[in-house]
Amino acid sequence: QVQLMESGGGSVQPGGSLRLSCSISGYTYSTYCLAWFRQAPGKEREGLAAIDNEGKASYADSVKDRITISADGAPNIVSLQLDTLNTEDSAIYYCAAGSFWPCTPHFAQNSNYWGQGTQVTVSS
Image (cartoon, rainbow, N blue to C red; front, side, top):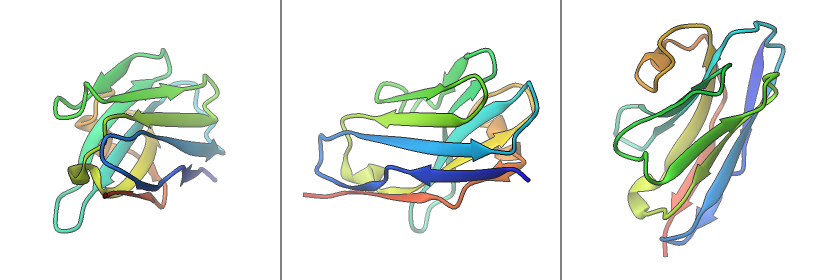
């Protein structure tokens, strides 16, 4: 049984940084695409970043200058570094995993497995 669990969310002031982590268990496929999404109240879910088993990363244009996705090779953990946060970054952040290509934030909507989400709140 594949399980994903996010951690690292919380409250931060504008301009600050957070590092989110997603612990992955039970995923035994050697090829994969791991991704991060977010969803703010009243808005659609937004794909942010994706990374494949070869370490190739892909980012949404809206956030590519402020975020970095990374993963170990197992996969056991996929992380998302968020920098220069602003109030519009407040949302629930989700990790996802699956075997599909291309591995991009857009196509990661097809992920087979999803975490429960972690809240990020940016306020002064």
